[in-house]
Image (cartoon, rainbow, N blue to C red):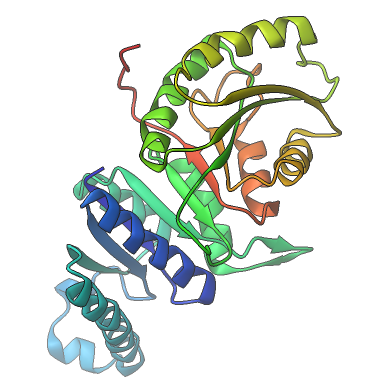
Length: 284
């Protein structure tokens, strides 16, 4: 992991994500890119100083962003973290996608408020959009983490062959945190695309073999929906982290369609890692 990006609107939950971004940057000796999007004209950089002077409210927005980012830069200097700041105008998601590509970002950390009823906050809604569009792992956090250790981890999947690549990527990430237990979880909703328990248990055995050296447990858990089932199970086992694959999104047999991933991220209070990658094969 060389480049970590954290989008921020300077809200409380965004600060939790920045704190985690600092921890990951230090742990992996990576560069931390702090990104914010503000309401600037699309042609702001091409405008003359005279033209900009006629938009004092936009200049104030830019100055405020620079001041707030400067405070995080000071922290990075104190802690010896490699650090870059990015201020962008235009549409948030387009700007974010461009930064992921231009800076070769391989990991994104985002804060999310989630949604309560019909109430939707800026950073929460954009987290869902990012999960839908970006082909990069996204770590979502809603609350401050007491410790940056993931000892009890849930990997939720339907465990078909297409999920092995994301699973190997997950193992490559989680090994640095020496987890005590990895729970392989599939949810049985008794729906159209549910699988008999015998077939699912056999599929999970193949994934368990890849967990050599870990205390790995398999679970076929019944609940009303995938989102609810994962959250209920994770709470029961007191998990530190939920991991889901958001790759291969077109397969109807996948336990997690894009909407299920977004629902889980939206409703879950514990950290969620959504795995998505460019189509690069992994050696088994």
